[in-house]
Image 1 (cartoon, rainbow, N blue to C red):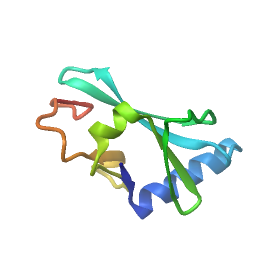
Image 2: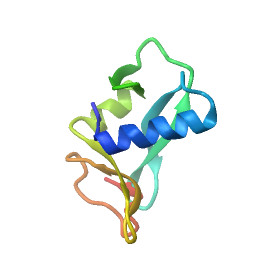
Image 3: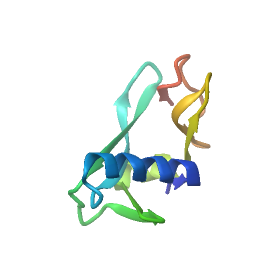
Image 4: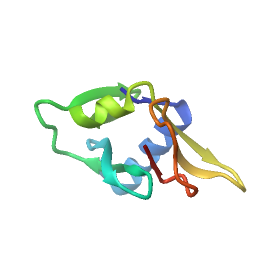
Length: 106
């Protein structure tokens, strides 16, 4: 399963609070697409399937479907807020290569 750093969990909590939907979970998924074969998808979700993997990081719930969980095993979601590198970033040991823009992998 994927792990959230403290900074990622804090930012997700801030975004949920700003949305006024603190009970939602962050869904992290891998979908076919992008120039390298797969791309990451993240969104807030209130629907939990019976086969979803659910983990919590403090007050943040993270959902991953079984197919995505295989591709996200050992991955880490981080959040950075800097001049040159801002936003969420997934480090995935299962990705053998990624595209130039960093949005997709294989």
